[in-house]
Image 1 (cartoon, rainbow, N blue to C red):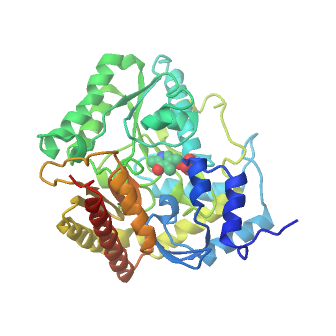
Image 2 (spheres, rainbow, N blue to C red):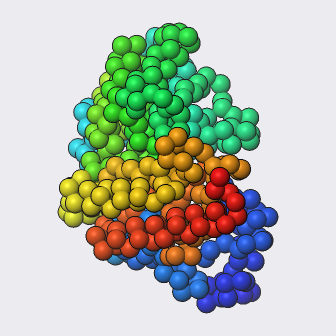
Image 3 (cartoon, protein in one colour):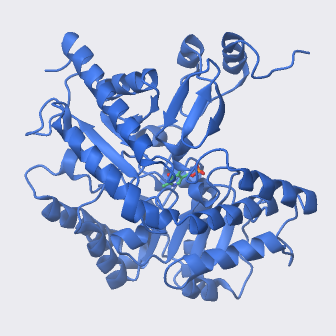
Length: 462
Ligand SMILES: *Cc1c(COP(=O)(O)O)cnc(C)c1O
C-alpha cells in the first residue's frame, strides 16, 4: 500500500482527493478538473501549500482559528487530556472535569444570566439543539403551539436539516426539501444591496419591523423564537444599520419571543467584545457558540442558555444529546484556548488596537474605482465590488463572476480572501500584527485592481 504523505507530488494527492473525498459546497467535476489546493502546514496567520507557497489566511480557516495556527499550548492540552481521559459521555448522570470547568468558564464569560451550556459537536448541531430546546421550553410553559422560529433570508446557521432550515440560503433550501416545517424567514438588514433610497437608519427599522409584521401574521401564540447572527458572516459580512438590533430586541420583548443570537462567528473576540451581542447591544436568551470556542483545533459547539429557560425545562428529561456533547478533549482544548484569549488580551486587542488599525487601512480601499463600500467591525470586514458606486449597481452578467475573479487573483497574490457574490470578505486571526495587516490590505488592493483590469478587458465592466 502507498503511504500518502506530504511528500507525494501534488498531482497525485489531488487525483486521490478527487477520486475519494467528497467536499462540502463543491462541484466534484470542477474540483477534479482544477485540483484542490493542498494545505500542508500553518503557523501564525500563514498557510503553506504542497507547492511551498506561503499564503496569508485572512479567513482564519473558516472564521475559527482566532488564536492563530501552531499554538503548542493547545496541542499539549489535547495530549494531556487524551492520556488522562480521552472520552467519557455526559449522559446518564455522569460528568467529567473538563466539561465542568468549561461550562463554568463559559457561564462566567457570557453576558447576563446565560449561565447554562448544552454542548454539541458543531455550530449546526447546537442550532438543532436550539430548535428542540425552544419548542420544548414553550411546551413546558403550557404553550405547545409556540413552535415557529423566525430567521432571515441569507442568514447562515449551519448545514444540518435544522441549521440549514433556520438559515436563509436559497441554494441550500433548493436541495433536500428544506426548510423543515414551522420555520419562517424575513428579509435581511442589507442596506447596500436592498436599501434603495432609504437612509441606513430608516432601512434598519423597516427590516426589523418585518419581524413584528411576521409575528402578527403568524400569531403571537405560535411564534417561539427569532434567530439571527449579530453580524451576518457567510452571507457576506453584512453589518446592520445601528437602528436594527435595538428594534429587534424591543419586538422580542413586547411579544415574549425568545431571542437566539448565533454567535458562532461573532463570539470569542471577533467583533472586539467577547460576544457580538455585546457589540450590537442585545440581551439574547440563547447564544449559539462554536468555531472560535476552540479556535478550530478540535470540533466543538454549544448553546448558552438563560437561567429562566434552564429552570423551566429542569423538571423533566430533555430527550436530546450527542455522543460527543462535552467531549473531554474538545473541552480541554477550549479551556486552554479561552485562557490564551484572556492572557494575551485578544478581545481588548481587537477592540482597541488591531480592529481600529484594520478599519483605517480597509476604509482606504474605497478609493479604488470598483469598491463601493469598505466596512469592518472588529476583525471582520467586507468590500462591495460595483461598477457604479453612486447607484450601488450590480455587474452585468452572472452575479459573483467579478468576486470569483478577485478571489482567484487573491490566491495568486498569496492571500485567502473569500467572495460572496461580488462582495469580498475577511476575518483574520485575532493575533494578526500591524505589518501583516499592511500586507493583507496591499494584497487585497492589488487583487481587486487586477480583477478590475481583467473585467474591463473582457467587457464585463459595463
Ligand atoms: C459556521 C456557522 C455555523 C455552523 O457551524 P458548523 O460548526 O459548521 O456546523 C452556524 N452559524 C454560524 C453563524 C456560522 O458561521
